[in-house]
Length: 428
Image (cartoon, rainbow, N blue to C red):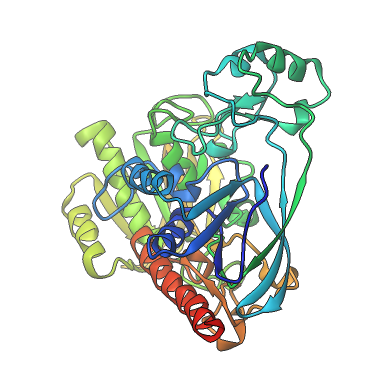
């Protein structure tokens, strides 16, 4: 990697999801020098793993493609993937940031021809598809990945498989001698756009995610719907591969619960309403969606999704906090147990498939990083003057949908620009 030039007029953006890309682009298009780092091999974050996002119900490829085009065209913006912050020292206007860049084992000669992928046979869990299928040890993270370069899994290094991958490349793009690089950046402001992660469904023991195969999470359901996903765009039961036409959606799976996440994750209700449209898209009137909910929080323009779902004769609502899920060993059906609080009727309802509308939590535990950032009880970064020239963007600041995350990221970019502008005025 060539030397990265950074000064106290540079803005560092940590995280290359939709919020990080937005913040970096807004700052760079205002003429500021920006470095965008991402821990994964490609930009895109959680949005790149969606099938569609609301309210327009469009595929994320369109929004990501536009951002990538802007990134490629902007000379003020430098992207570094497979990079993580290890230390931050200094203060507003003068931060020293240490960054570790993991080896990709593939250099810039790569044309994404796929020869290395064909040469190796070893497979690993596919992180992009939430481990619902496998990928090769030499792989392109996903079809729109930027940079459009393959990656050699570090678990192959030192093996005959790695040698086969190298031998297959006629562009001399595979470098098995790559090592971890340590960068030290001097920057004026930092935007933390580290995103969110799904709450671990294994912790919700009554719902049996770890032992009932036909209980999945909402993020897994998104990947299942993608035609390039693990099931080729079909809604199939993990237990037997059969079509799932009767689907239950359980709200607040890990959210608004003292035992798990106390906060409302905001997107879950709307995500399930959106996913009922997937069932109709696939099965028409033959499909059935049942939403088990405490209350529906689909505010302002997202209320349209709720209105449409209520009018759909294939969508049913049961006001209930599901008590537990058991397994019908004959049919492999998950069976939901609980009480419908509208009339207080006990139920024991079997479904083909259960989708847990899983809670949203910060991807990074900032309290463990030794960085002077104010975080709230839920782990999100607070907007606090004590943070100096460091700002949160998107879901590092709160549980947000895509639209609000992008708006929040724009605001954070403007705050970071103010910091470096003020510094330039003083130095001038």
